[in-house]
Structure formats: structure tokens, C-alpha cells
Image (cartoon, rainbow, N blue to C red; front, side):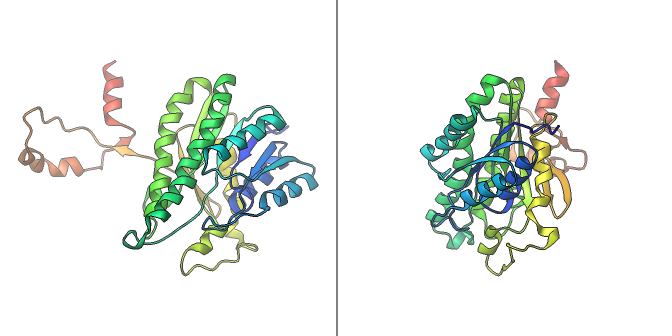
Length: 296
């Protein structure tokens, strides 16, 4: 029997692309799925019944699913997603924050409205839906949460200041919630996917057939990483990159602290600049936390 049998899975932005692939796979493994999607375009305009189409696809295959067409970018919409899950299935076990749009421009040319809407959908939207689901997971001592981040946030990408900042913000949420959720068996991770989706075609110069993607670019090749992050034995606080049949983990590293004392000057730091910037012996995680743990 699948470990996801009868688990209640909420997936935002599941009307197409990555979210649809995740929804179909969870449903095929016996999960009850809430398919959320406003149904707008790749840049966040308009609305449609994309969520209904995915629900019908799941039901036609013998699965269980309901649709929710609210926007994650409002507190009311985000709350309604979790409310619908509880009303239909009694709870929520797994939350995959996948909803997203793109408004790419170089920072010099970016209208602040494009900054705001990206933050509202990606960062605020993920926070709103997670905030609605968190008390349920906390009370029953079980939860799995995935934030869909991006290499644009981890490494940077030209023309995506708004998107990269929002995606990096998700790493901060993950880092804190992984700590806060550890004692309650709530595991929180970030996904950085690569696939052919509708968002790709909002990028100038990109024109992919997202309805018939290159097999190596298919969104379903990302989904195994999501299942791993939502499994019974899931990790927590990890950043997993997935796409094109390739998987890896990214992490933050910190070198040893330079203790220069209360009288430190700019010249003192300048003298040891090479030591400060040398990452050859850096280790994953906080050097200060490692030192505190060693002193205990």
C-alpha cells in the first residue's frame, strides 16, 4: 500500500505544469487532493477553470479530488483553500506551495507593481496558505510542507529581481519553520524545479510547446522530489533541485568566525580579508551554532 493512501494533499497552482503533475501522481497513489488554481495566465492575469479539468482527470482515473479556484495572494483566498480541504476531507496532511507567476524585467525597467504582485503570489501567498494549514498540522503532530523556490533565488538570474527575492524569501521561511515544526513532526523543505511550463513562455525569447514538452523537460520528472519531501521519512530544512531527470541538494555554508575583539577597526579586518573570504574549509550550517553546540 502506498504511504500516501488517504493522505490529504493541498497543491496550489495545480491547474497545469508542475502542480498538475504533482496532483496526478499523489492521486494515483491514493491521496485525496485539493487542486487549487485561479486559472490565470502565466503573468497572473485573468482566471479560468483549469482546476476543474485536473479534478476531472483525477476522478476519471478513479482518484479523489476537489477544486478550489481562489487566489493565494489574498488572505481570504488562501484560507478558503484550507477551509475547503477540511470541509471535504476533514484535515490537511501535505501542503505543496506551487502557485506562481512571472513578471520578468531588468530592475531598472521594473514597475513596482510587478514587484508587488510577485511578492503577493509567491512569498505572501505561500505564507498565507501555510499559516492557514499550520495549526491543523501542529495539533495532530503531522505535516509536510513544500515551498517551490527557484535557482533564480538560490543563484540569481538576470531580469528576475522580484522573482528571485520572493524565492529566496521561501528559504528563510523554510529555515525557521523547520525549526518550529521539528518537535511536532512537521517537516518543511524547498524545491527548486526545472521543467517546461506555462511560466517559461512568459520569458522573452522562450517559446516551448508546453502541451507537448520535450520528455526531458516534462514537469512529471520533478514530482519524485516532491514525494520524497512529503514522505513519512522526509528530510526537513533541505533545498532539493529537480528537473530533467537530475536531482541534487543545495545548502548554505559558513566558514569559521574571525574573532577580532571589541576594538576592531576597518584596517584590522582588511588585514585578514583573505581569511574572511576563504570558503575552502566552510561547513554546512552556521559556524556560530556549531560553536555553541560544541561548548555545551
